[in-house]
Amino acid sequence: MKRIFLLVLMTMISTSTFAQKKKSVAKKPATTTTAKGVLAKIDNLVAEVKTGNFQVTISENGKPKDAITVKAVDAKFAPTNCKLTSFTASGVKLYLLTWTEVVVIKSDLKTENLTNVYSVVYEIPNKRQVFSNTQTTNHIVEKVFLDRLKTASETQEKIRREGFEFILNADGTITQKNKTQENKWKYDPATFEFVDAKKK
Image 1 (cartoon, helix red, strand yellow):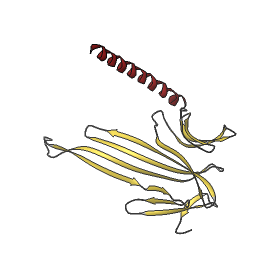
Image 2 (image 1 turned 90 degrees about the vertical axis):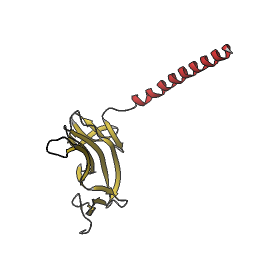
Image 3 (image 1 turned 90 degrees about the horizontal axis):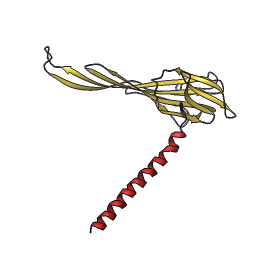
Image 4 (image 1 turned 135 degrees about the horizontal axis):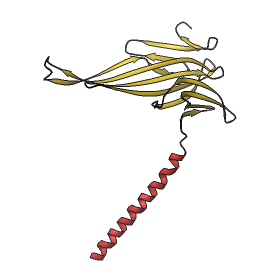
């Protein structure tokens, strides 16, 4: 009986040791293949952070040729959900860059979590920004006192939204929506900008 117990125990120890070794080997390639600073790629374009700038680098024959600066950034810049997408609008190929930034503002009584979703459209041959949109969601958690002596309090939560939700439609038009308003935009190749679709 003791031999069987020892045999089972040794088998379990060797199996768990083997499984741990196997896991550590599987993790290594994933870290070495991630390029530092590169956030999104499509065609010959790379969205990246380089020398204090968030930029779209344009390559030719595999080598960086030019860049469009999105904005100057510092070491704290940590965008998420960064994507580059190509689409056609009025017969012209355009590129949509989207990313999210989260900012936390804390005080003794209030915490604000601001989620900013950015959407910027570029016309690459002329290196032009042809449309931009920012939507902000502010989640506020605040301690509110119920009397003048501050003996009783409650925690209140609020959500505030600013700006428009950005929607890229299948036909290359853009829709901006909020609770009370909806705007539709169509690309005008002559002026290199999106114009009101109702007027076009």
